[in-house]
Image (cartoon, rainbow, N blue to C red; front, side, top):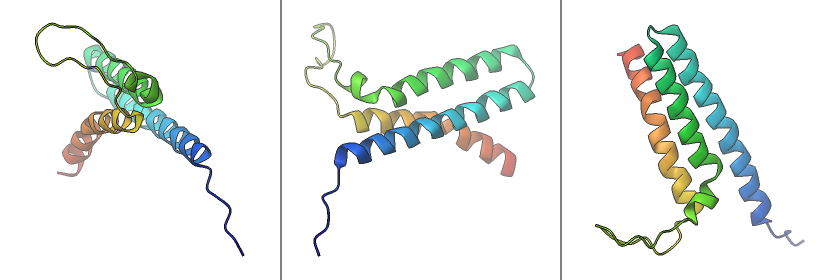
Length: 107
């Protein structure tokens, strides 16, 4: 009996869909918590933060291919970044406030 080859493109699309669904859930948690607290500044911050993070998670492949030849200070970005790396960094930054919320609730 032989095993069928794994379709890596299909697997990546499934992972991308799961990542998108989870990002919507996390964004909903942030926005719900911000509405339960006082102040419009926190609400606006939660919405903007969620939208920006979700852009980097949802479109990580496209944003990873962006590079610039700007020759100002600092290094020049002249190669594409892997989409999974862009998504991973976005997730790390996106989950920091959730960790703080959980820490403040439990601790």
